[in-house]
Length: 174
Image (cartoon, rainbow, N blue to C red; front, side, top):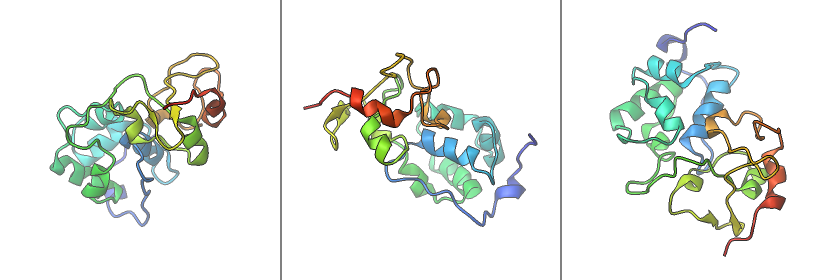
């Protein structure tokens, strides 16, 4: 795969829009896999934006230091999104993140297949919409979920069970 440079994607005729509440990890995984982009690693995208190796940290929900406005603007210019829109995929100030395990509401995922940022908040105990506890591993093989940037197939990376089928295994949350 050839190295990506800033000139090739600076003025994109298209934009990959984030979903409502989508985590930055899932969004950048989708962005890199888009047929018009084809960037294999977060490092390549970070380098093209001139922001150093921070995107790999962001995809793992490591926001220390918290992304600066300057870095958000640089990556935004490269991918065709406003810095404020990218900031919406980051936790609100003061919200602590659960770095591991990656969590999932399979019922939400079955409705709209993307990772929600709020699932990684330390303050989130379950899905308020479905009143179900979040899954932190595949209920079939017990493999922990990969970071959302790697959720290309929407399935367990070990047994390949689709996330949408896991909702039957979620416990009620009250």
